[in-house]
Image (cartoon, rainbow, N blue to C red; front, side):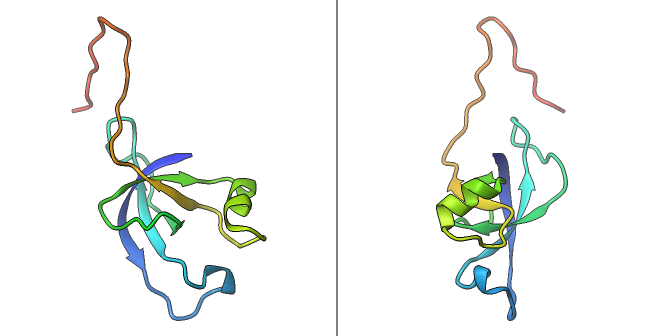
Length: 99
């Protein structure tokens, strides 16, 4: 699974039937501190996410087929919107944030 932030959406007039009725989002992967981590990519929305939302993305074909049924040509699927996230660390250690 990938932790990411929705940074935009894609509009298309012609698309594969497997994408019919589904929103396509531009997402930015995030690290454990909520900072950008890697290149942006496209993901199909299955959680009613929108720009600015932090999301969980499933990137595994069998799991996507189980959620959507059939064999849609979808490689990355937004499966949840994150309300909050916490990074635990051992007691007595400082959690250094990147500068």
